[in-house]
Length: 518
Image (tube, rainbow, N blue to C red; front, side, top):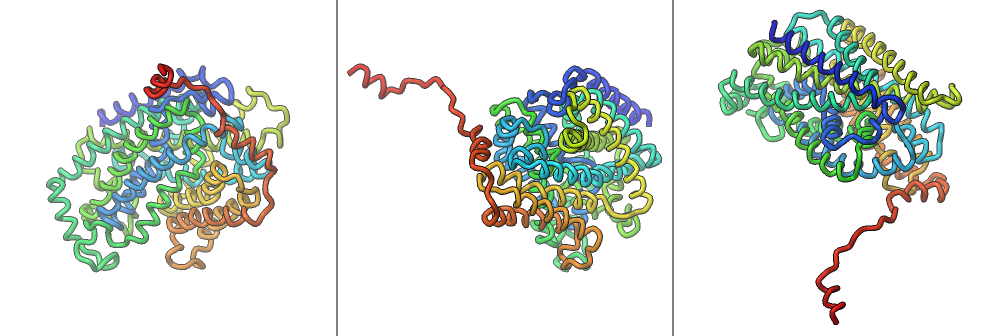
């Protein structure tokens, strides 16, 4: 217990000291929300990765989908690395950074408002973000509580209050820069932690080959009648596995707290480095989490899924590890959760301040006032999410994965297509954006309150979220072709940033030298 507590105290002390140190970067809105757009590739890549993977992934998704699909759940982590990280950086990174700076946008709603010349679009996006980031935040606490309960036997309420208060301190003090530096440290912990945990868990089952052989012997007629389904290439249910890959991989393209990382990176050169770093990070952390979860059924004698739920699987797998490794796991999941929480509260509070309150309810808001309100809303947002997390836990409403599925489905279903088409296609219209907003939020709300009216495959919030994203990619271009176009000068000005002429030093080729000698 002493070792675990010592590791926690050192971890918390470092986080708070970094927050205090970074106060000088958080004196204005640009510094507090974007770190002055001067964050390097390593910090940005780790901030992207640690915001991506949290207790929701490690405790919720890895446990649930590892149990359902066996070793094939590793495909989810691979999809996260190559679709959610590599392709996201390649397709969105450069264009997002250039156009958002050109339009002077600090948030996703502000980008929509400037790109489509619509104040209403900006306000609508800010409301959607504030509402649907809350259930995602609540799910972070839930996952962490399971692990703390196993490691320290700490009351759930105390656990989430400590996490919320400490995260709030360094985010309020240092803003985005403090978050980015802490994310880097937390990311290193996650990298070492996941490798050590996988090695220890597999060793407890006789090593990799022995564990794989044991997994092949597991039978569950309710999941699959195929022998060895849980150690097969595509698992017992490839179609639903594909839905999870789509939601957790493509979904990041439309999440404000993820896309905002591209706003803050310092240069185009940094984007190239960040792409490689972020992809490798995701491959190790996400791939490792789902790979570990794939062996969950080997611990069925230690956990009763029907009574305890899927969220109890990973803690059961870790309960037999040495104290030092349990302490490392606690730091791993705490790092993942705090980094994601910090990104969520900054995205939500800055959006509500800059896109909803500013100019609409509070006129002529000074920079100092804006930063003060953002900090106040961070406190409010954390408090609301803590209350919801406690209510959700005590009422036993749903699993972590469903909470995250609702949030990701609504946000990505609303914003993914308008963002992507808005960055690449000049003919994207205002009406198409509204249709995407209505489609994404409407579908997920309906799934949440009346899921039984959907076909069986879409009753799951995971599948519904994937369907929301794919549907929006079709809706936006179709609606754009039949609705009034934006003013040509506005669109030309938005895309002018990609066509800016620059002077470069050209090397004289051998052919040129020969021509001169003649």
